[in-house]
Structures are given as structure tokens and as C-alpha cells.
Image (cartoon, rainbow, N blue to C red; front, side):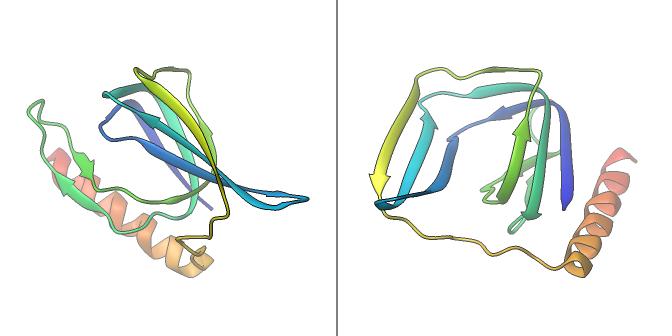
Length: 120
């Protein structure tokens, strides 16, 4: 498992999908926010970080965009979720499969190098 940590994160277009097995089949819980979501000390425990696209936002920090990942645990000290919406759908299927431990080690090395090069 790979842990991604962010001191302060702002997320535009947040959508979280959680598939839940029930006696009546799969149910998909969907959380969205209609505005920018703010997190303090966000930790994501992932087995597939998806494709990683970076950019430099106006504040000069490194930014990620078009993020889709397979997270198994998400924690945060605090969050602001404006225009929070929770909905449910019958059915659903996995959109991402877990990566192998070796693949996660390679992704971790890539991310560390990305952060080092951005810090210069």
C-alpha cells in the first residue's frame, strides 16, 4: 500500500465512489461537492494511484489534476465540503485494480523524484 500525504489540499470536482456489497447486490455510494473542498493533513492509502498529471498552480506549489485513484483509507484532520451531496446507485463495478507491490515501489520512487525536482 502507498501512503500519499498532503498538509493542505484543495480539490475541485471532488467525487468519491464507494462500492458496498449488500444482501441485495452491489450499492455505490457517491459523494460529490459543488465547490472546492479543503483538507488539512490529508492521508490517502492507495493501491493504485492512477495516472498522475501535474501542474503548477498560482501559489507555486505542485498540483495534481484529473486524479482517479483506488483508496482503501482516507483520513484528514479537518475538511470543508461545501455543497456536499451524497447519493446512492444500485450496481457498480471496480474502475481500477490494485497494483502489485513492485509497481507501487516504482510509483513511489517516481513521486519522490518529482517532488525533489519541484523543490529545486
